Length: 258
Image (cartoon, rainbow, N blue to C red; front, side):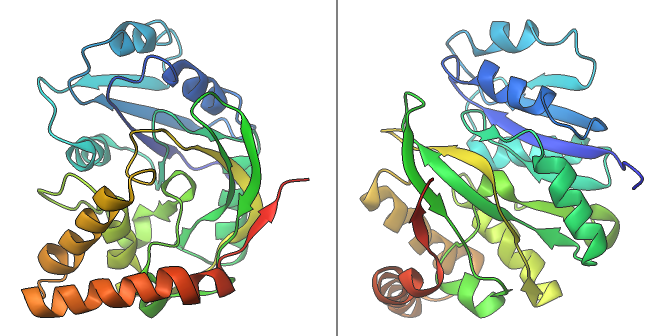
């Protein structure tokens, strides 16, 4: 299989505790033709110096923003700089398993899929395994994705030769969900690689750990991205909560890690 260039999009902000491990998980990939574009979003800790210590690997790039604009803006900047056919996403505190790129690109080619994602497992802020794998529907539809973001950002890869470069402007949070929605509006469905290929770090100050913040940002997706009025957006949030608690567990499995 020809190894097309994969551009890895990594926004960073005050990630000194984690980013070296994240970079090493990319360097350990069995698929070698990649570029890692790190856009730092105004870090005030040692993130920059840590990334600079890895720049002897010419596949790694560092671009600095003068102030904190938000993760979405940093991702957009990285996408604009990407030269690869495939665009992949990895935040600065998450990890990839060594065969992640190789298996996922092979799946995309063999299954003729311009966009894929995968299952993943979870760890806590200190890197301790939480003993569960997050699975996803075997076939994901736009309708399912409208009601809940069922794709782990650290697992998504799309083919820019088919979809072009996708950016979501002026959005600080939940930009990944809006990107997947944009893709599925065109492809209608998507299939995941049915394997656990990545490790998601749950941090105490993350959106996923703060239910209130998650609800607020999800409301903004309905209100500002879908351009729905206030009443309809509130109705969608009620639907979101129903799906999250009653429907989602039926097709998004959380099974114990062996």
